[in-house]
Amino acid sequence: MPEEQLNCFVQVVASVERVGNALGTLAFTWATVVLLGGYPTSITCVDFAYATALFFLEAARMFCPNRSEYQLFFRTRGALRPFSWNRVIVVICLNNVGLFLPSTKSKELSVSILMLVAATLPFPGVHKLKGGPLRNAISLLSPLVVMTVTTLIQMLGWTNQEDNQIRLLAAKITAELARGLQIVTIPGAMNSISSLLDNQNKQQIQELIIQKDSGGEENCWILKLWHQMTKKWSILEEEQWTETDVFLVLGLVTLERLATYDIVNCMEISRSMDLIPKITEFTSNNSERICVNETSQKILIDLSLKVLRRLASIGGETGITLRHKISEDPFLLGNLAEILEDSKSSQELRKLTIDILIKLAMDETTKREIGSIQVIVQMLMFAFTAQDDLPGAYSDCSMTMKAGQALSMLTLESADNCSAIMKEPGHRFFKDVARMLVHDNRYIHVAANVLQNLCKHSRVELGDSVLVELSSVLLEVLGQVMDAEGKELEVLVGLSSQICRVSPKSFSKALEQGQKEARFVEKLINGLNANMKPNPQFPGIRSVIVEQCIYMMELSSRYATYFRNHELMEALIRVEKTPSRAEKYRLFLGNTGLIEHRVNLSSLVERAKQLMAVHSTQQP
Image (tube, rainbow, N blue to C red; front, side, top):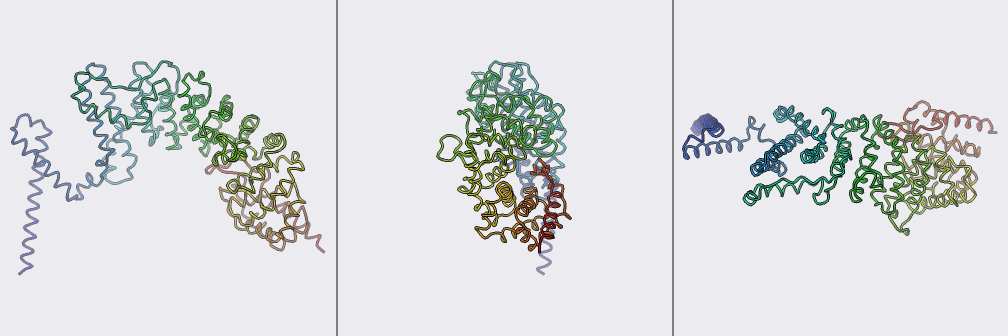
């Protein structure tokens, strides 16, 4: 029967496979013992060749079926990727190079280099593991990895001159590892990294050059390959960095990457006593003060600003602590003012500087201090109002936006800073910002924010010419409110409410001219009902809407009638029933509320209800 023949064939194949597996495993084990046990020195070449052939044939057989018992080894193909091969080649090259180093000290150096590079081999793989058998296999190496990386970082604290070469390579590898490193598990790590920023040695530090014996160099192909591979380690280009600033740059690069990777690293930075003052020192334009040349100074300023920007951008209690420590430096704001004022400063440096000012201005005390520095205020005003027809670095859209954001933050709940801006001769700044609101859609939101703050806190300084400018843009603002939602609605209603307060006649005239009273009132009520749940992107939207209603009802009882017809009272009652602590704040950084409203929402709602009740009793 065909079925019986087929079953017989299957049984034969299965039996042969089992026998083959048994023999193959035995041969594989024997070949492994022969090759790794030292027996090749005592067997003939023929036997050695057979053992080698058996070894690789059995390995190929294991690889091809990819059975479940072998998936631990062959499921991951990371070993076949170029970067993983580079690591293997690095170890081989370094080990080979040691044979050509004549002196004992150089051989010790090669061993140290080998240990440092070996520290990088398992590390990224450990971070990328999420589970499975491969994690269990590699986890056996974890204690060794932690110990090796700990030793590596401790080398950063070797400040003796004779250790500079090893320390330099350790700093480079640490900078690479910093992209995925949590230093909280490494004792004394921050002190070791901080030592890289010590600027005590004034002598030149050369890049690491592996010394070679001239007689063996021509025959060492691995040595040549090693030189080619070192060119790919692009943290610092060798020809650019031969001064004492090498350690400084590596230290700043490491800190930025650590802070970018994990907020826990930022917490460790905040706990360090002298680290932040070291970072802020490099923002100085005075090259003599930090004892570096002019080229190195520019790079150090750029890197230190990047580190400070990252640290100042952290949310939560850690961010508050970091911003406080950064702003404590008595020279920092002066250094930032010099960068903004210096005509040689690049566009990138100015942007970094403005970003830092925006974050530091979240603290009330620092905000007042920044506003008291006239150079900073003037440069921000110029950067914000400068257009494409003006030369220089300020004719950039992103620069204009950042300058506007900085001015918006400086004027937020700050009467002193608003007064300082309005006291500039001729109030030209106010007019320029008002025109930006109408003629350039790119800056509507930030311009509206700045104008809102100026109107709110500088009512006394607003002259007739300023009120005329406000009246000219009011129609445009009201028209944009009709189509706005979310953050845009919050900003535009906030501006319209302040214009209503400082120039009520112009506001009433604009609404009547466009016959927008009913539509505008309906938009306000709909916005109130649609935002019963606060959003961290626009936490104050209900406050500005209720405030707008109050100013309009104070202006005319006619608006109270509109509000009553559109059920404002019912909306106010719903607001009362859904209070939120988030609405106490003007803005958020992460989940942390910053800068509280001077008048809370419950007080505004109570005032609006009182006005509604008063106007209701006045109705015939």
